[in-house]
Length: 538
Image (cartoon, rainbow, N blue to C red; front, side):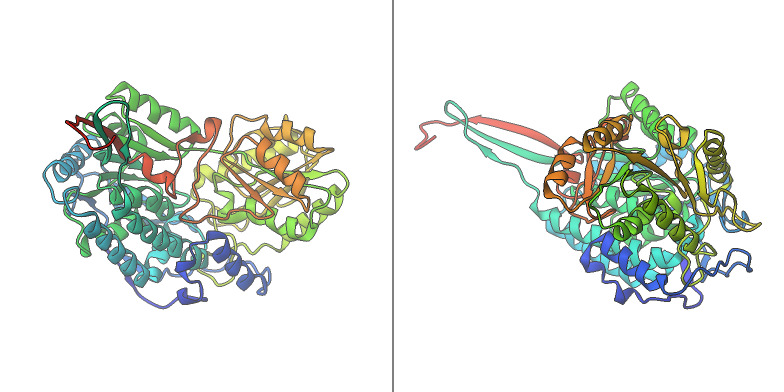
């Protein structure tokens, strides 16, 4: 995948948001502050901005080369701003997955990557991070074009975070080792931490490159090889950055990229007998299929990062203005297309009415429009399917008796834009309070006391994340332990760092990504025991 920058389009230079911080939330807050002064002038009705990039390659990446699909088929990837075709991309299927897995298997069994010193692997990953940083603008532009997310968000928040993740795991590459274990009797016992082998990875469309980094970086740092399937809605950016990896010296076959559809390419990857492990991020329903296919084939281990319906709890003593802005960002960031979106906003009854009014006012100020225009906070939804699904949920909320405070309809007449929508008087049994909407729809519920909100917050099949806003350390301590979720943010939200683990309880997933915990699923632990003769000590 090659993308050429055609013109300069950066309202805030990447140097102003240092990727070395690694804090997703800090970069995001800086971006929000930069656009909050611009005002709510909408741009969706204007002519779409011509993206400052050109797509030159859209083939599969197999064994270090860009190639057509074996079938010769292609599929279109669309611009969410207009519904028009961006490019036709090679459509991989089971035969292409076989080719990619064969290349990855050969690279693992016979190639230099797992036999290379860990230090040399780390140097390649560091070189890649440096090169990606230099290509920040091009990568951000292709990501914004293919997914509809604001360019400023991609350029100043997400791509710097991708760079940080690769640097983090590059640093881990030569620090992975086993233990020497004292055992009863005259034996020397040690453990080896070995790469698991060929890893199959499937990434979603909402954060294509960010989640690419969460999977590819630890896998490569541990010495594995990879076959990665992109989401059919957003295949372009992974091809581009993978080409950069080849340029810095990644051996052929170590990383292979397949674009295609879940029932064909995805199913073939999960079912493949020569794939040693699968990592998937996406919906809970698809996660069940991935787990089943992996078990029915060679019982390969699977890590899953799935859906959520995360509670955002605002206690009576919270700073309302801070909580309103945080709740707004927790829900509406990335067009509401976040697995950990704070999509159930629980507010104490004593401050409920004030919170609702301020949340409505903030939603009405949200800047919706072409993601390539300066100051835009919210672009279009990913495609027509997601667009119609969200509008259906909005209609159900109205029919169920929730009060529509703002939005509730499409924005403009072209593309997949939806007005920022806020519902009050939401009840737990409503679909908008139970289902993962994955769109710009904030539901605000009322609660009386801590015991009640804990019970209601946990009454879901999901358990990905939660937010708590309170000035009481006792309340914070009670809630952080009582909430059955993988991450609890206290007086903040969406703080993502390369070192902080992320994953869910219950049907929100299995395993963890990022941090030291993200390494374990890409390693096998081998115990080695040998007898000692006449040891000086035990």
